[in-house]
Structure formats: C-alpha cells, structure tokens
Length: 138
Image 1 (cartoon, one colour):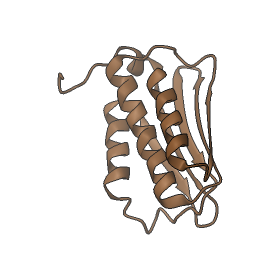
Image 2 (tube, one colour):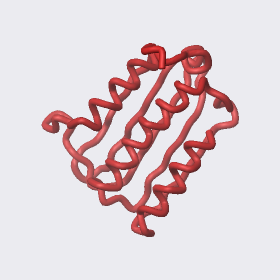
Image 3 (cartoon, one colour):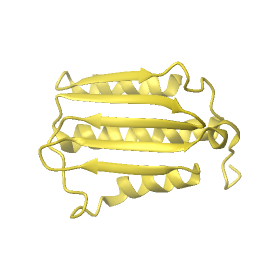
Image 4 (cartoon, one colour):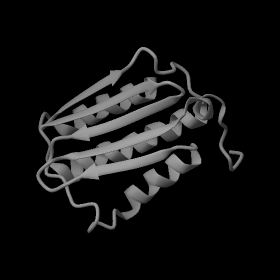
C-alpha cells in the first residue's frame, strides 16, 4: 500500500501541523490488492482525508485498514467538528466515494454528528479486491 503511505505523508505535509495523521495497517490486511481495486480504495480514502482537511478542523485523523474473516475494511476517522449526514447532501465527494465502493463490490458508511467528528468506513469481500479489474475495461 505504497500509494496509501504516500497519500498519508502528503496529507501530513498539507495539514501544516494543524492536525496529526496516523496510519495503521493490520498484518492480516492483504499486501497486494489488484492494481485497479487498490487505486480505487486509495481514492476513497483520499476523498475522506480531503474532506477532513477542508471541512472538519480536526486535531487527529486516523486511517486504518484491517481484515475481519473474508472482509477487508478501511476507515478514516477524525475528531473534528462533524456534521449531520441527514441534512447534508454530501456533494460530489461523498457521491464519488459511494460509487467507488459499489464498483468494488463493497459498502461505504459515513457516521458523523455535529461536535463529534466523522467516520468513513469501507467494507468489501476480500476476494473482490484481490482479483477485481476495472469493470469499464480500462
């Protein structure tokens, strides 16, 4: 997950020390996803990190990847100002994250409330991320 490590490093630099960014990759998380699936997963996390940086005013942001049985999970959580997902349309960024999650055969959950930070969680069957190719054939 070299791309994810580079993304976290870039986010740290772009935060200009306004908040901490941590990355935890569980030892059971697959080291190699299909090229396309890995790129899509990084883009989901990139959008979540960008939203935290632009909108949340966090002190801490964490990115975590792990495996539970036959599922892989990826999560970005922040302790920022949060928002009410029921009143937020979510915009292009959230729509993009959800579409990518669906194309990967997974689900995306966004939990937040004002004053309590935000958690973006992706979950998908591991088999889909190991072998999946771009459904558009690119």
